[in-house]
Image 1 (cartoon, rainbow, N blue to C red):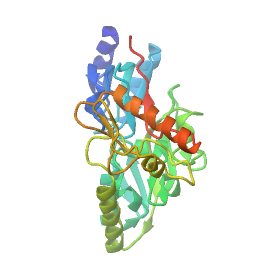
Image 2: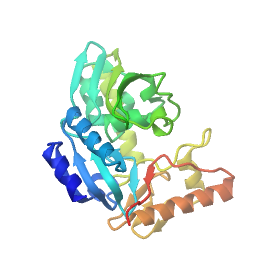
Image 3: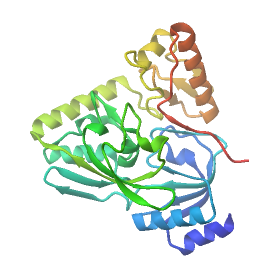
Length: 303
């Protein structure tokens, strides 16, 4: 792996670290080390990184702000690529917004709201990056990415880069084509918004922020654990099973919202995984409903 580290650094791909703890890069603050951690600060540097990854046939994965991610305590073999600074360009032309995948989703929503652009009010309380939001069709308050995305620029493992239209993203509830059928890295997105009243937009976003503050935990967490098994809601099913506040190790089901697991300061990924297993089994036994995780679970693949 030392040879690969040297080649990455020689190609000036950005920050390159070995055995970087992924607990430093996930919102729940758990996760073992990445064998190689790369933080490119431009699309060109990301392309160089992927060339080296493919040259050595290395396993790889991309993360943004780690808000919907649970990484095993064993960590991840191969290369973990984090999109952030330098991958967060923003261009606004009328109601069309082109934005880099590394841009903060909340910051974007607030910035566009102040400019009187409507359509991203739902994002005012959603952490994470634009890339992650586009990848998983993030949503809240009756709206989601599929309602505003015009197209997304995606890098595929073979090195090709394509613009995928909204239709080609094959969006459904918290899902896109990129999750299974065509794995790829979102580089940037174009959103088609509408002109709106700044005061109305600000009021809507304030309402969403207040709702989030009052109903969701502020302790480190990984966001919603389960997808809502519509027409039921995961949080309600977990609450009705009297699981709120239940803990294993340093991980606890939030006392505010049943569909969140918080890190009380000493949680390990194995604690969180054990809680998820217990929640799934309890709801299945009690309600006959099989729960599916919304958080992306990355199993440890390091020896």
